Amino acid sequence: MKGEKRKLVISKTITFLFIVGFIILFKSIFGDENTLIGVTTITGALTFLERNLTTRKGRYFIELLVLNIGLGIFSYIAGLNPTLALIFNFISMFIIGYIFSYDIRSHMYVPFGLQYVFMLAVPVDLSGLYKRVLSLIFSSIFIMVVQIIVNRNKIEKEGVPAIKNLIDITIKLLKSEDVKKDKELKFKFESISIKLKEVIYNSKKENFHIETNGKAMIDIVIFLRSICNRKFEIEDKEMYIEALKKINLYIEEKRDLRTLNEIDFIDTDLDLKVISKLLINLQNKKDKNNFIVSDELKSKNKLNRYFNKNSMSFRYAIRIGITIGLSSFIVDYFNIFQGKWMLFTIFALIQPYSEYGKIKTIQRMQGTFIGAVIAFVLFSLVNNPIIQSVFIIGVGYLDSFHKTYKEKMIYVTISAIGASLILGGTFKMVSTRLILIMLGVVISAIGNKFILPYSIEDAKKELVHMYALNKEKIINEIRSENKNGSLENLYIVSSLIEKKLYEFNYNEEIKNKKEEILDEYFTFKRKVLS
View 1 (cartoon, rainbow, N blue to C red):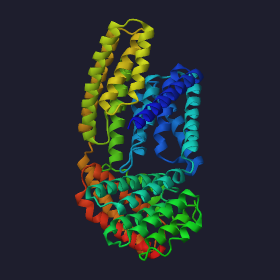
View 2 (cartoon, helix red, strand yellow; view 1 turned 90 degrees about the horizontal axis):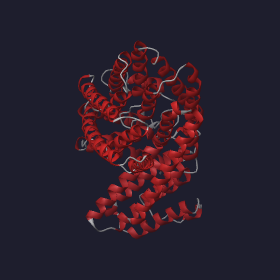
View 3 (tube, rainbow, N blue to C red; view 1 turned 60 degrees about the horizontal axis):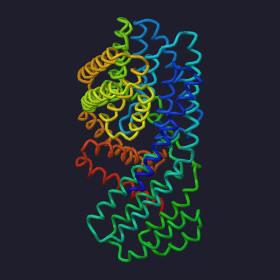
């Protein structure tokens, strides 16, 4: 445990130092007015590591570039007068909210939304627009470079160790005679397998197409699960354990086929033989077959499908667009000093799910109040600017270890107030900022409650409906013998929906359907692969 904590501290420290160094370098190249774009560039690069953009590098880079430059130009136009601010800020935030909020995956709107609000907070004139656009171009390039460095061959890099872990867990399950330990091992098996499915899902091509090595990993998981589920039916567990050890040895020894040939005689039910065949497919990254991309799986139609008042993405996009659009209009029209803090707060608290908005609102108020009290006391007692600067850097470092939004807001508030005071701000100015933050809290609460609210109950209904439709698609694809090549994609989608429903404590209602889907999928795969 101490070793793990030491590794965590070292990792966080290196990351913190890299981020600080990057922002300082970014500032020196693109100027003070674009410093915050450096912050969101790092945020975006880290956030998008969850997705694998290397599967279509050219296309994703162009999309990032167009979006970044477009938002930069829109933010400039929005700064010309209050009316344009209302129109262009609504359009920009709607696009960000609609495109980057998801039903079954984590949302990706934060880096783009934050970047846009930062550009509104620190506007540039026409002479400074070129440098802002250059900083946004650099941001797109940096995100893609990080993708290529970290996510290239991601399925191979993360998938193979995951398969090895799942085989180790299967061996432990076969050895175990403790019911409680069995339950813990099965939970661990599920956690690793769902993470693997997410990696494969986020590395797709053409919106649904999973390459051969990804398909092989999905199928290895279900055949390993079959062995786990048949634990008490297997008479000679030692032979199975030895076979699984040889399979892991095959993986470790970089595909020595002689190791696999030694297990052919062991499994009368074919599970291990199928796994052996699938391991060979891990070397293949491309399919020889050209599958048809059905209309519903194409990008434009997927976007159109959610363009209605019942979808979470549409409701969130409207809500964030209206609240930011109207608030920016008020700030510009009345020329409210430090009005940007109201916009920052609104962006942070307007959430896709109403319940999350309420939780974050309470935590933000608590964190802001506690942080403000600490900052006022701390910077009143210590007047030395150097020591104050050290405090701010230390608070920024501690922020990297935060676990809750409330804790984060304590650190952020201390840093923001401290930086303002060091740069010549007065306590009156800081008090004004806090008032604007609280005003942003009120506006956010009203927006979350009255502007097309979308609750967790709404999400549950939508996900259950989606799950039922996806189940039908799986059955139809099985009946057509996977002619569209989308079966593996549909299977992963069902798993991701299940995960999301579990997060909402909604598991009993889908338990039977989950088993039906797994049974249908496994039966088909065993027939095809054996």
